[in-house]
Length: 118
Image (cartoon, rainbow, N blue to C red; front, side, top):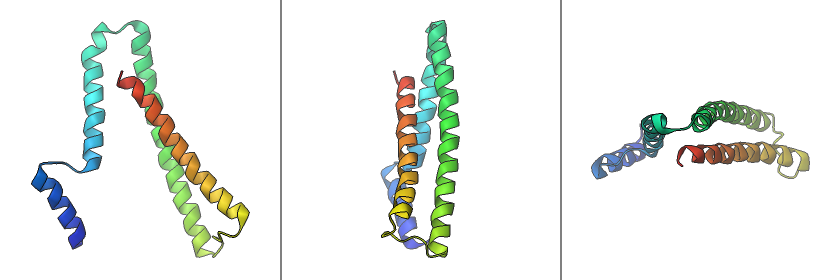
């Protein structure tokens, strides 16, 4: 670990804050905890909705991870073989199409997660 990473981590420790990734994990855990507490008071449809949201969130998360890995792999191959030419319209369009597909999937997942926060 280099000095910048160590300094960045120590800043989180000094302020009593946690790394941002842990804050997101904690928020997801809090959301699930609140859902479990509210579960007895939910109607049958609301329970169904909660289960569907959790399943869809997991599936979309897996698709996003696979898409990012695929995107990284393709970009690395394009760079290695010298085919990543920004002047080449079709290559540029394909790469940014893949990037925007991942961003759209992330936003879609975020929209679905907003159902859990209601």
